[in-house]
Image (cartoon, rainbow, N blue to C red):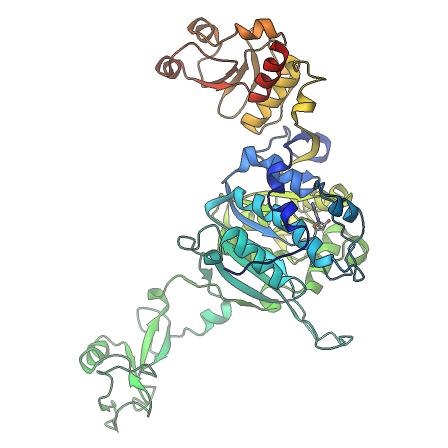
Length: 541
Ligand SMILES: C[S@@+](CC[C@H](N)C(=O)[O-])C[C@H]1O[C@@H](n2cnc3c(N)ncnc32)[C@H](O)[C@@H]1O
C-alpha cells in the first residue's frame, strides 16, 4: 500500500506509546453531577493527546462513536503544534502558530494527527466507527493517515456536507460550499449504519388513491434496464389495449406468471382509467422501516454553518457566535451522525470539542428517543469552561429563547468535569527514589483500576480499604518500607479479615493463596504496579 511521508513522521509513529498517563482531577464546581465520576458524561480540560491516554484505562474498546472536528489547517487558524516529541527539529516547531507562511504546516498537521488517531482507534469498540470533519486542505492527507492507522479496508464513506446555504460571493475561485466527513469503522466487515427514518417528504410520496386496506403505497415502474430473460411479454390493459412489451432497451421486472399473480392480489396499478402502463404498488407497511444513509447531506436536512452560529448565539444568549467561537457545527449535523452510528446506550467521544456541539446533540437525541447515550468531550483552550461546559450547562437547564420546545424546557442530564493533572510517571509516583507513601500509591492504583475519582478521606489503613467503585470495594496491602514490603502478601488470613460481602479488588505485593479460594471469597487479586518493584530492587542492591 502506498504510504504518506512527512517531516517528523519517524518521531511520532510511536509517540502515543511514550505519552505518560496523567491523573484526571475532578473539578466538582464546574460539573453538574453530585459526585464526579469518569463513568458520567464528561468534559475533560486539557490537551487531547494526554487526555485520550488518561482515558484509556476507563474507555479502552468502549466507545461506539467518535466524532472529531480537528483544525482544518487552512492557514488562518491559530493552532500550534505542541507535542513534547523528543527531537530537536520538532522542539523548534513548538509553540509557533501554524499559518500560511509556514512551509511545514502540512507536516506539523500530520505529526499532530497521527498519534491522536492511534489513541482514538484504541478507544473504539469493535463495532464502533469514527467520523472526521475535514475540508480540501487536508482531506487527502487525512485519508492516507487513516488508511495507515485504521486500514484502508475499513474506509466506509466520505460524506459531503453542504455547509453553505448560499454561494460565497467573495470566493476567489469557486465558492467552497461543502465539507467532508470521513467515516472509518473499526471493522467495516461487521459495522453497519442504522437506517434513517423516512423524511416527511419521502412519506408524502406514499398515497392510497384506491383505498387499499394495506395502506398507502408508492408506484414502482414495471420496466427496468437490467436484462431479464423473462421480462419481454405483451400485456393487455384492463381497458383492453395491448402493450407490446416494455419500452425499447428495458425489460419487465417480473415474469408473466408473477405479474398476473400480483394483479390478482391487487398489487398492480393500471391508472385511474385502467388503461395506463401498469406499475407495481409498493406498500409503506411492507418496506424496510428506514432508509440507508446517503453520502450527500444537504444543509436543508442537517443545518448549515450559518445555522450553527445562530444556534450557538441563541444558547449562549450572545449577540453573535463569531464573538464567542468561530467554527461551530450545527447540532443537527452531529445528531445525524449519532442516529447512524449509535445505540441508545452508546458512548460518544469528541476530542476536539470546541463549543460543545456534540454534547448538545447527544442530550437532544437522548431526550427525543429516551436514550441513555453518554458523551466524553475534550477541549484544551481556556474557553473550555466559559463556552464548552457553559453551553452544556445551559442546554441541560433550558434555553428560554429557543424555538425548539424541547431545548427551551431543557435537555436534562448532568456531567462531570475533569482536568488533566500531573503525569503519572515513576518519577512522580516515587519521590527521589523513595517508595511512594500509602495515600499516593492508593490514589494511583484506585484510579487506574476503576477510572473513578479517588477520595483520600475514605482510606481505612486498618483494613486496607481505599475506596468503592461501581464493581468493587478496593483494598491496598502496602507500606512504604522495603523490609516490610518484602514479607507482605495476600494470604487467607488477610482475605478472611476483609470487611464486607461484595466483590473486592485487592492490590498487594504478592499472594500466597490459590485462585479458587480467592474466588470463593469474591476477591480479585491485583499485583502492585511493577514500577514499585524496580525501586525495591534498586534499593535492595
Ligand atoms: C474546529 S473546532 C471544533 C468545533 C466543534 N465541532 C463545535 O461544533 O464547536 C476544533 C477545536 O479543537 C480544539 N483543539 C485543537 N487542538 C486540540 C488539542 N490538542 N487538544 C484538545 N483540543 C484541541 C480547538 O481548541 C478547537 O476548539
